[in-house]
Every structure is written in C-alpha cells, then in structure tokens.
Length: 116
Image: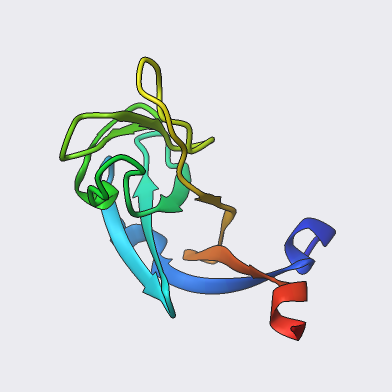
C-alpha cells in the first residue's frame, strides 16, 4: 500500500464485477450514504448520495460520461469533482476509490478521525 492509501482508512464496499456499468449503486457505511459508479471506461467514482439542491438520490440518476444527472431536477454533477455544473450551483462530497484484486475500496475516514 502506498503512502496515499496508508493515510486513510479504506472500507471494502463492493466487488468490481458486480457494479453495473453506467449506473449508480447505493452504499451505506455507518452514518454515510454514498453513490458509487462504474463508468464505461472502467473507472470507479464515489460521491455523497444526495443532491445539494433537493436531496435527490444520485445513485438513481442518469450517467453520461463522467457526470450524473440528479433524478429530481436534472442538475448535472461532475463525478470527479462533485461540482454541480452551471448555471446551477453546489457541490457534493467525493471519496477516494481504489480497486485491488476485484474488490472496490473507498476512503471513508482519515486515520486522524479514527484516533479521536
């Protein structure tokens, strides 16, 4: 595990092959609810599962390229940065992801959060 990975606490959340392509999946860990997406490129991205506008469930949104459209009001959100695209505003939290041996891991806690 490299230094980037070792400063965070990683949680196994899914099998890579079980994730639908160009569709979201809801993942819950303690009080957090995330949406993870497997894109046509094979890339996995994870964001907070609620639109900042009206709490739309983003895992249920339509995926286009590296964007998801909120199912409630069609706001376009960049899956890499979490930024809502103009003319709308807002942002959702993104999470670091890595895949190893067919398992998908998400950084849900910094090690400093675990110690406190």
